[in-house]
Image (cartoon, rainbow, N blue to C red; front, side, top):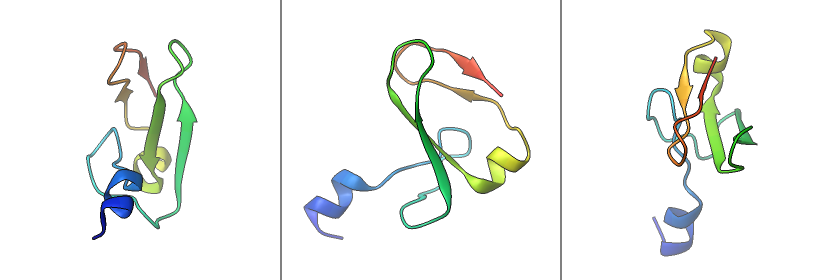
Length: 59
Protein backbone atom coordinates (compact mmCIF):
# COMPACT_ATOMS: atom_id res chain seq x y z
CA UNK A 1 0.00 0.00 0.00
CA UNK A 2 1.42 3.39 -0.92
CA UNK A 3 1.82 6.27 1.54
CA UNK A 4 -1.15 8.08 -0.03
CA UNK A 5 -3.35 4.98 0.30
CA UNK A 6 -2.36 4.52 3.95
CA UNK A 7 -3.32 8.12 4.73
CA UNK A 8 -6.76 7.59 3.16
CA UNK A 9 -7.39 4.11 4.64
CA UNK A 10 -10.31 4.17 7.03
CA UNK A 11 -11.22 1.86 9.86
CA UNK A 12 -14.65 1.19 11.30
CA UNK A 13 -14.76 2.94 14.68
CA UNK A 14 -17.01 0.14 16.03
CA UNK A 15 -15.20 -3.05 14.97
CA UNK A 16 -11.85 -1.78 13.65
CA UNK A 17 -11.86 -3.44 10.22
CA UNK A 18 -10.30 -1.65 7.26
CA UNK A 19 -13.20 -0.22 5.25
CA UNK A 20 -11.22 1.29 2.39
CA UNK A 21 -13.21 0.55 -0.75
CA UNK A 22 -16.20 -0.91 1.12
CA UNK A 23 -19.71 0.40 1.36
CA UNK A 24 -19.45 2.40 4.55
CA UNK A 25 -20.63 5.61 6.16
CA UNK A 26 -18.30 8.48 6.97
CA UNK A 27 -19.70 11.41 8.88
CA UNK A 28 -18.73 14.17 11.29
CA UNK A 29 -19.08 13.62 15.04
CA UNK A 30 -22.19 15.49 16.24
CA UNK A 31 -20.21 17.02 19.14
CA UNK A 32 -16.72 17.86 17.86
CA UNK A 33 -16.81 17.41 14.08
CA UNK A 34 -14.13 14.68 14.00
CA UNK A 35 -14.56 12.30 11.03
CA UNK A 36 -16.13 8.95 12.00
CA UNK A 37 -16.28 5.92 9.69
CA UNK A 38 -18.44 2.85 10.16
CA UNK A 39 -18.76 -0.35 8.13
CA UNK A 40 -22.10 -1.41 6.71
CA UNK A 41 -22.34 -4.41 9.08
CA UNK A 42 -21.97 -2.30 12.24
CA UNK A 43 -24.42 0.28 10.89
CA UNK A 44 -26.98 -2.42 10.09
CA UNK A 45 -26.60 -3.98 13.54
CA UNK A 46 -26.73 -0.54 15.24
CA UNK A 47 -23.46 -1.28 17.06
CA UNK A 48 -22.33 1.48 19.39
CA UNK A 49 -19.48 3.75 18.37
CA UNK A 50 -17.29 6.20 20.26
CA UNK A 51 -15.60 9.28 18.83
CA UNK A 52 -11.83 9.01 19.23
CA UNK A 53 -11.52 12.74 19.90
CA UNK A 54 -14.28 13.66 22.36
CA UNK A 55 -15.74 10.33 23.54
CA UNK A 56 -19.24 10.96 22.08
CA UNK A 57 -21.21 7.68 22.10
CA UNK A 58 -23.71 6.91 19.37
CA UNK A 59 -25.84 4.05 18.12
